[in-house]
Image (cartoon, rainbow, N blue to C red; front, side, top):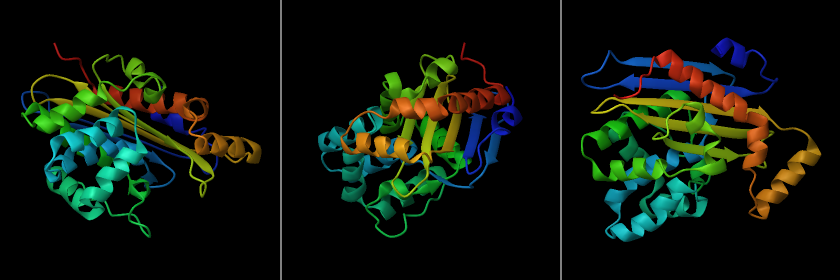
Length: 260
């Protein structure tokens, strides 16, 4: 399916983005794919959690304390553990370190700096940052390697079928899902890092923000969030097919081939 087919029937007020990067020494020329409909930037907090984990490791004198928070932040998308990393090191330090390592610059959220989830990003920026993470791991960065290992442990509903859609059992996956009380959309997003061997990497990103305006459905959704109950099924119903379609089309456009 083409990007045009995926995006032409978006509801009014919806946003969707996809981006991908294929690059690395000893492979074909670098290739970049990017498409956007709607807002230029979206809140995609969970996609940034592995990057936050990566750069905060150097600021924790106690590696075990870092791991206690970093691993659940990546594997089960724990907000409380991400917040611990975010506040212990500081948002400006974290975002500055990401810029130094990846060349991608993100601004701290407006208002309350403790709200790590309010950082707004674009899909092509996320793809660029993850390509840097993956190549650092390939070059021997042990923390980056650990982060990618945790991403390969993301399973079940929390990966929205992305690994199966991309037909890569070894892909590192990170997904996110949320509908904030101040928004009339459900945000569902994912990044996948696919193995290629050596320093070659392929990264694909899908980001969606789908209208969710029915008052009764939103009330039920918020009640489930407040009670700590799963809402992944609702995000799957609203955006799962679109998210997987964006990622698979991006991968196809990149001309990705499995490592031999």
